[in-house]
Amino acid sequence: MIKNGSVKIGNTEMYYAQFGSGSKILIALPGLSDGLATVKGKALVLRASFKRFLKEFTVYMFSRKNNMPEGYTIEQMADDQVVAMKLLGITKASILGVSQGGMISQYIAIKYPEVVDKLVLAVTAPCVSGILREGVTGWIEMVQKDDHTALMVDTAERMYSEKYLSKYSKMFPVLAKFTKPKSYERFLRNANAILEFDVKERLSEIKSKTLIIAGDDDKTVGNDAPYELKNGIKDSELYIYEGLGHGVFEEAKDFYARVYEFVR
Image (cartoon, rainbow, N blue to C red):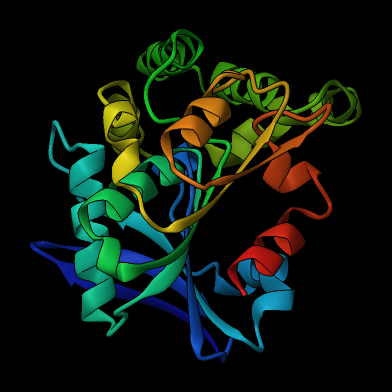
């Protein structure tokens, strides 16, 4: 099954992409890039990364809801995500949270442990480090100046390995021309929510079996973040990719295989 759908959340909608036909459920929550473009209409494209899941799992990838109020927090995003799950009849699922999606996932596991089977936290953090604050604050300033090219280039430089950058860096300014949104309001609401996020003292409340995935050169959330998660979440597993950073979910060829083996 391949489906592009939405659920009603209050006075707005939340888009999702659905694929696979298995009895197990995997929910994937993307990072800050969701502030620039939602998953609407992209189920067929997104399905490619999850091919090995499709017989055993039904996979849902959710965007944040369309109309986010000013001051919308990561905790409120988690609350709305659980509402969306219930509206779709999902009572329990494994959750893969990437970057900001991992922050939302932490709150879901803390507040709604009954809906979480297994938890995968990829290139994320339990709170805002100095390097993360610097990066997000810089991105906010770039969009306020309407400098989308600078945003795309800086994001890439903080995300990818030197090997990847040397191969593709010339493409980023070109891609910027095709990825600029009509409005940055959605991006700014997501970005400002990150700056207020902190569950470091609540990590012990996460009881789900948890896998933490990171790179050893993460210029976005910093290299201490995965160890803070590991130390805070009892019996959690940690895997670090050497030579990679925040973009491990794109650069590491075995990333999705690793997630699959853990959640199945």
